[in-house]
Length: 317
Image (cartoon, rainbow, N blue to C red; front, side, top):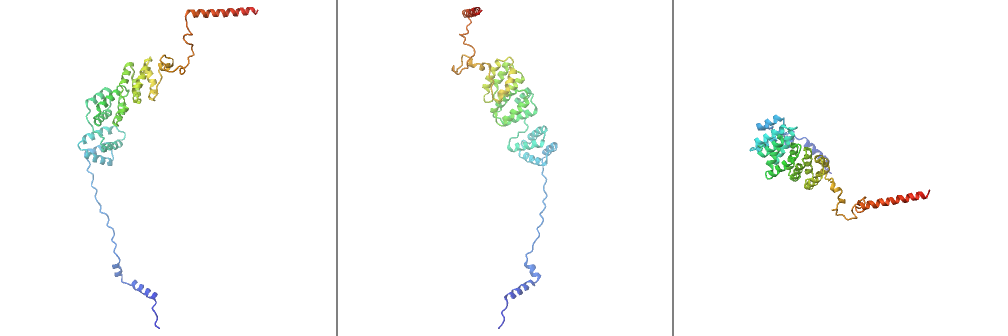
């Protein structure tokens, strides 16, 4: 009986034959791996920065990244480039941190709120001369005129009212201009009544300044507060000192009662009922009459009492 081939032996023989194959066949069958090529080095082209922008950066020691951003904006604003750079020179000269202020101004340029240096008009020059405003305030006034063309006349009239009463015009103007640029005209009330009050009572500078602050803090009811102040100052011998004392109370939203309001319960025009009115300790006027007949009757009564006491004393002896 012939022997059957062992399948395991056949598999092992086939594996050995495959392992003894030629190396050329193995190399031809395996895929060739190519090494990655190094990335091509590109030479970065240097930024062709504007000479005026570079000069500004060197003057204030500004970093290049902000100068590149400024140069891009100046390319978009070619028509106002000279005015913009002149304005930047003006504001950065007075800044503690030129880089920080430049970043803020770049944001204004991108939002369309930046205004370059513009020659001030006659109205601004008049205010600057009359109230001795510094250059920063003049620059802000010019910016206000450009950004609020429709309401510039009303804005300047309101500003002049407040500047006529304040003690430090430049500082006050800076605060008020900031409110106007934010569109908060209602927070700067009309102080015509306050000016009339200051002229009527001849208030000094401190009192005028306090009066303006009261009007600004009480913008919602400024007319009512001025009327209350007028009544109070009419009864004062020193209106300026009285106003300075009442300033804090009025600015905090309160009112100080005047003399006529203290005794309103005893007046003939009191609208309260008799039960609600405070009782007076003094007797009614009819019972305290001072005519001659009542005086004689009282004296006679006192004499009778004294005689009766003397008679009782003698009887007891």
